[in-house]
Length: 204
View 1 (cartoon, one colour):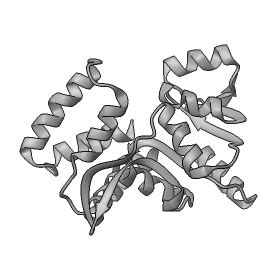
View 2 (cartoon, one colour):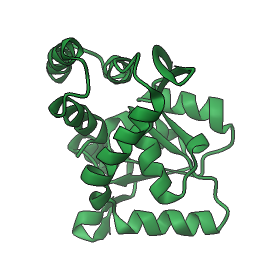
View 3 (spheres, helix red, strand yellow):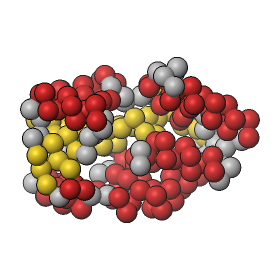
């Protein structure tokens, strides 16, 4: 499950957004799937639509969503890898075009602190969510976020979709995990290592 899309559907099914906003977002997302809305625009709108809600409340909702819908799908191999890297003193960041609330909920499962999460985020004012976007780490936006916030050479990057290509190219060593078909095709051409946890084996 794509966590960003999954969270959107989860919110809509539970009526967590105002009805007017829900109708608009459903129509907008249909246009996005039809290629009528750009990726980074849609990623930003899916976060900005929460303007007026309380940040702690949405963080709680995201935690509930992650625990019930995503956590069981975490690859044990990736959890073990992150633990080994942390034990060796590696500085680990989570970079995603999903909203900051969901990514922070997931990152804590790996011991990654909130200040090492670079996801789609808006300004928070006195605990309230605004529609003022801070960043949209998608495509080139991921490498831009790395340049601004990480500021050190990236030894390794892990990605699964075409929106990770620029970040994978930016790292000294790219690793492709359970890739979408388009990224798998590119990784084969580039000779990037690919790993398919569901098949319990690596292949190049």
